[in-house]
Image 1 (cartoon, rainbow, N blue to C red):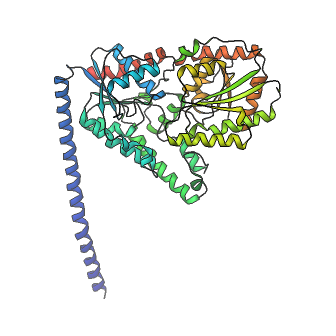
Image 2 (cartoon, rainbow, N blue to C red):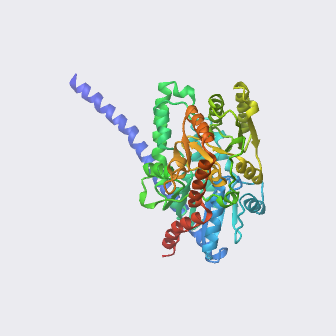
Image 3 (tube, one colour):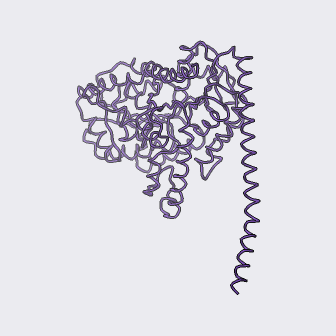
Amino acid sequence: MAAAERGGSSEFVRFMLSLIIPVLFISACLLLALVAVLMVVRFWVSQKKKLARRAGKNGKIVVAFFHPYCNAGGGGERVLWCAVRAMQQRYEDVAVVIYTGDLNVAAEEILDGAYRRFNIKLPRPVQFIFLEKRYLVEAKLYPYFTLLGQSLGSMLLGWEALMKCVPDIFIDSMGYAFTLPLFKNLGGCRVGCYVHYPTISTDMLSVVRNRNPRFNNASFISKNPILSNMKILYYYAFSLMYGLVGSCSDIIMVNSTWTLNHILALWKAGNRTHVIYPPCDVQAFLDIPLMDDSKKTNHSIVSVSQFRPEKDHPLQIKAFHQFLKMKRTHALSVKLILIGGCRNADDEERVSQLKELCEKLDIKDDVEFKINVSFEELKTYLSEATIGLHTMWNEHFGIGVVECMAAGTIILSHNSGGPKLDIVIKHDGGVTGFLADTEECYAEAMNNILSLSSEKRLEIRKNARQSVSRFSDEEFKDSFLSAMELFLAKKTM
């Protein structure tokens, strides 16, 4: 009987080996084939790079910026054009390439837009590489597992970019970190990045872990322990991948202390990471004269931000409603003015919902909406405002906060992220603004600001103006070129 059992056992072992050995052999062959393909691609790419430099770039170093939405006209695009201008002003032997998915506009229109929106004119032409598969990085394509879907999509879009132009130096200036190993390992490029906002942060992990409902954590997930645990596993797995791809960057530039802390925690590359504040057009707002508001009876509270969910406009409206109920300065007339851009139908729907909220709270006559205003109109509203309002939780930096301070408003910002760590901080011991994080705190701060004497408000406004010189175009240029100096020095050694 025992012999029969041993015979059956040995038959089972032989059967399993007959299955496992072919599987291992096939897997090994596929792995070797993949390595061979990657080596061939790497060789082909390197040859293509050499030919491109000899034939078309007159031996210049080719620096490529990966910015699929370079014509969007936001703060990230201002960083891009200031960086390109700085590169061209400093280096004659550098040819700049920009990968973009803006297929519906010509190169000349993109450059005209940069001049019209940001008053930035480039010293020399740049080459645009137009990408046809930008749809692969759009969030609407991935209703579930959006972070992973967009990241994998960016790799496919990056592959298209690599096949069309192989640069010497590749810079991701829009947050697509998964393109970095592609250009480094297959393209043989030196790679760098400017991080405006980490794709995933330790704060996002804590939101899911603590089951807090937010715009990026639906209530049906936060209320369900099983779904929450599954999302935590997904986020941890993704953060591990994000850390691996990001850590291959040779130079890492981040826009704030808040972003720095998260990137250091995830990428663990402190010796290659530099804080470079984004360039803010502070001079245009500093030109607005500071006026004494002691005789002003009509005050305005102005919010400047796109109508996106993370900007939390409902908090602004609810806090203003609370303020109107507690207002002790009854002689004053105060309006809330929401200024922002609408990118699409979703943003327009959000504005409609905000107007409905105003009606529900019976304050529709006290709140104004200004959509897609011109720069000159924006300056006018800010020059007349008493308070500049910001409510986004963990704003990575806060260009709008800087602009409000430069324009002479008293800023009331969210007590988190870049505003807390970098912007609304004391200057030479003086107060530069106020921070809050709940409806009640915001309402109380609004009341306190309007209850201050005009002399005290003027002192705070002056402090704020003096503090924002840290965020000027010139400061950005010097810091950016200092980081790139290390980059290009290594390249030319």
